[in-house]
Image (cartoon, rainbow, N blue to C red; front, side, top):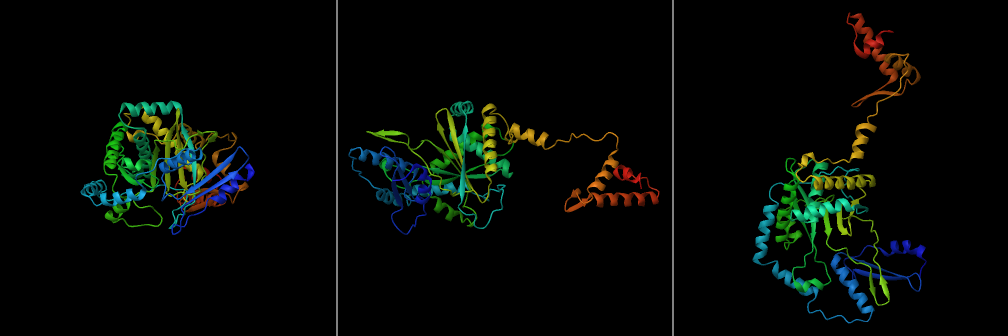
Length: 426
């Protein structure tokens, strides 16, 4: 039993690393807040559970709790593994391997993402997330566009993400990871286990392409990935002979997930009302992960990022840039990628006007060079000019200008510009 105020500390203590050499890779804790209110904490290593497994587990757990009897499963995860091992040695895999080697032929791009902090050899797992929403008006426009072009919100969002990354990195060849469900058989639909296979989706957001053309290209490329999704990522990495770097994931550092399901929902089982909740793990497996799903009239998005690379303000701006790209695509599908603006109107105003404010009141009874000499007298050691790696104080600049003016006059040359102004008193 615990007080509700203690729940945060209990959750933090509950989340601990798993040792993959020791079972179980699963832990549960029930915290009693009151006679009517309990919190069930569940922590499962991803190697044994995917998102759909958690939904199945929670559904069956409370069905049993409410007195129902579950039908016996004819097949277990071990049966799927045995079937998969046989399938991965079939001629079908030879065809899929050929398709993947063609999709990933040539030099593979490395995403040169601008970061707030330099990438280290061991970037660490510390991560955070930023949630944002695509509001109803834009969400409706995006859904209408997807329906009209026989595409999906996934494809529209993936296209926008590619455009954003291309503009950030000045690259026209982008690979983004995409987790695929990986439950190819009817028997596997109700199994618990890890079925997800995250595969690379390669696209070419070249500046002259129109947005609708690029989205259509993304759609074709993704269908090609779907058709060959049974091929395993680890095997593909070995075939491509990719050099491993401790600071990066092989093939891609950014992944995108568009959830077709919102996961566990508020559900009543007899006299029990179950409401889902999540605990932030404080980790990030990739440099950047974008997740999105439809939540009623809007689309909820979440950016998970490595704290060793990005600051929270950068991620917040990134969310605004992505929303801005989606807005422009929805309003003008014919727009060329090069004409899509990354920054928002508010950022543009800041850059063009607030950062460039040069209206100042000067004393009307003094000339520019007289004002300069006043500053040289009042603040002799304050920085006046910075050029590349050189810096000059007001005193140094004043002395150099006077010296140069005297030298020019001595040689019969009339000084011009600022030096001429300074030389009037020399």
